[in-house]
Amino acid sequence: MTDNQINSKDQTVLFVDDEKAILQSLNRACRNTGWRILTATSGRSGLELLGKEQVDLIVSDMRMPEMDGAEFLEKSKEASPESVRVLLTGFSDIASTIAAINKGKIFSYITKPWDNDELKNTLKQAMHVKLLESERQRLELLTQQQNQELQDLNAGLEEKVAIRTRALQLTHQKLKQSYNNSVEVFASLLERRSENTSGHGRRVAAICQKMCNALELDAETGEQVYFAALLHDIGKIALPDQLIDVAYEKMTRKQQVIYEMHSKIGESTLLAIEYLNEAASYIRHHHESKDGKGFPDQLRDGEIPFGAQLIGLASYYDELASGLYGSEPLLEDELDRALQAKAGNRFDEQLVLAFLEQLHQGNLSENKAADRQLTIGDLKPGMVLSRDVYTPDGRMILSRNRELTEGVILKLRIFQQETDGLLQLYVFNDELKR
Image (tube, rainbow, N blue to C red; front, side):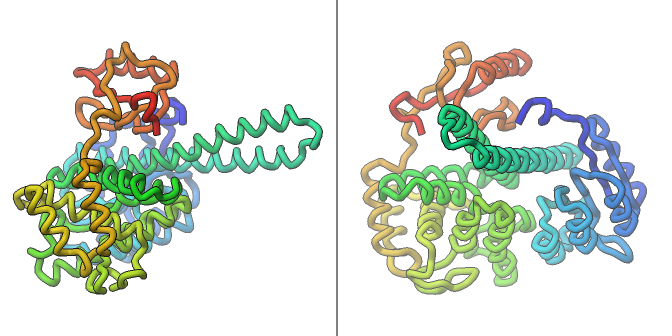
């Protein structure tokens, strides 16, 4: 995706609310974005606008007469299937909000009253996802066109075939990078949901990646496990704030019922992306238990996908080791006892033994020798980023595994000159590129 696409001012936002004062407030909040703003005071008039206008982002209030936000957003899928949808809702509407997310393919929701900065950031994230999806579709179309061209080539034109093959490989790499960028956007959005659990998904993903390498799983499976681990809590975006930072055991049964829906919501969020369907299955089942007492499907033992079991174990370990949900981090001996106590009932015994073996060998800790920190002046084309690059105020601008080119390095130099604070840049050691 080019910079011109990312910074394009041609995007259109449709705000739908039966209160004109709310529409005026939304307009003011987005006045410096450069977006074209459309408004409608009912779901019916919103659908009429969608029949006439190309809209990138739809933001609808939940409570409206005649047609509520959930029904409107569900119908908007037919009128404008490529639009990204966001719901405005109150805390009292959590059940309706979850239903709307499932039916309306909603990207996110914003609680009322909102903070203007958080509102704008959420809408910018949604618009960025729209741009990524448009780029994915463009690349898929380009791949189809190039495949057709290859079929029409004369079998004897070996040089021409080789040129087209290289072009296809480059297209595939770009398409894969587009998927990777989508996952990183989701992960960054998820981390903004709670400061207390920020970083949990990335730590679990790193642990799972090292376990997959130790167990010598094939690269495709390892990649799906990594993506699923990174996004295993994405369904929590739909949960009310009071359930985000509370341990499951400390919830009331009514709260647990709501909480248990997040793994299903997480799966449904990714099902639209075919490339991540396997990862979506792992997310659905990462709370299942070997003894059948987990959720959401009460699977037992061999019925639970291995990737889901590994993510569940890594997540449980990180919760204990990091002291999440208000508890104190456990010491090494305490961690061993806690994991062993779950072997055979919550987790598979052999998996726990393998996990503990890697843990005791120090293979699951952060491997600082795998990468090194450099200044912008030390960067060279061909180097590969080992960590995501964030601005000093916490926005991700480049994802890990990105290979540096002269153009990217030049943009980083310009960006740092225009930004207060230094960028934290880490690259893989040459022998450890991934």
